[in-house]
Length: 225
Image 1 (cartoon, helix red, strand yellow):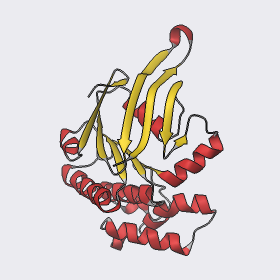
Image 2 (spheres, one colour):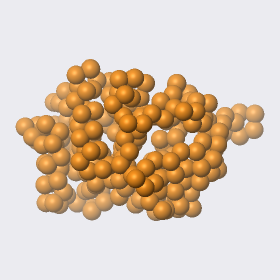
Image 3 (cartoon, one colour):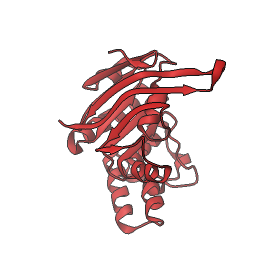
């Protein structure tokens, strides 16, 4: 496997002066192409801040962040937006679906934003992804009519819509019952194995972590294991 991304000596400080809080303290991490890794650590350890930086939604105070050979520290906001849309997908604990949209409309939304409109190829890919998620019969259902597990599967499909190299998942099963959580993880594992998509999954659930081939432990703003 080759390196998909690498961060070196990441520091992130919020606030200034006596109110300054250093959340990341020189964190370094390398992810290989096709990895499926769990991100572990107690609340307040810096996991969410790290995911936000890796997703190019926030820049570190200092350090190095390279993905696919691109220096993302030097990139401006427009370049980061384009890079994020093309190469990174997100799955959140709270699925963040648009309630007035159907399952299909939610899935194709990232591509519609990029293209400026819905297209036939996007709708075809959206239907295919939802079918792979076991939601072929729910494609035209509004998000409000879906169960929690179904909504999260829609969220996974949406994250995959633009064929990203990296998917960042922040507690993606945190609000699901055990059966639904395992269904979501089975789908993530399948996508990882079949398409080589890299997944970094933040979780407090040891069972979810055990399904990942690598466990990365963060503590006090640094990788500790």
